[in-house]
Image (tube, rainbow, N blue to C red; front, side, top):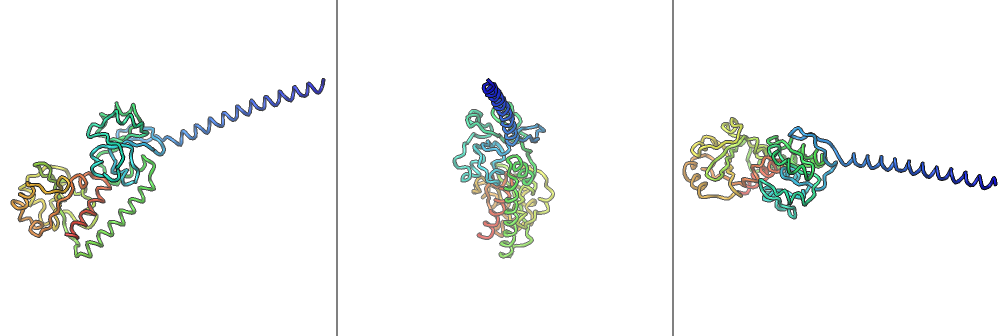
Length: 307
């Protein structure tokens, strides 16, 4: 009888222990899940002053903007627009093309992204895109370094950002050394953009790669702080005494209009008379990003030293 009571009591104790262990185990598992969830998400404030919960390290990004920064960080997006596909064709090979200025929302939804990047001037897209995934808006018009830092923080790639900046600093020193070896120092450079039938000038900061290589803007260029159209007749005064003259054209190709200007009202510009005129790719030179700055520098050096 005593043996039976002892056995029954032992079973009760063991059963209670198992129940408590199960409860404790469930609590631990729940805590682990919550911890993992916290690791997966961060709350950031974007350029529209919105609190956006994003993955700790996004894996499937739709880059409606800032594919250039992802290129610099060596992070391939799941999808981007045809604009970026044209600038980085090799890097974006196999990436989904979601269209132009008005991306295909159905395509984006089908990809099931965990992050969508837009610019703050595209806030009208939010209503549709927020139904698909977290949407983070970057600030349009900030410097390439600030833009890169923002995107690096967003995608948890600060180490990659540091590595890129270190690489760019090294390339800058190499560019200066290459120019010096060719006897090119303390020279001025001017840039105009030929688009359609209009000629545009920009704040020299847009062409930072050119000036990081050691060139300086002309006096007229230094006074300009905006993007604006300029009369073709005013270009000689703007370019002034520049030693090197860069003209942005579609894909860096000549056009009848450019040829006419160079042989006509622009022919007496010192750089034109010296044969120091270079046609460069409009999209790759003008998109104001860290990779664009890097491309400007390398392209300018290649064209000047190999002419």
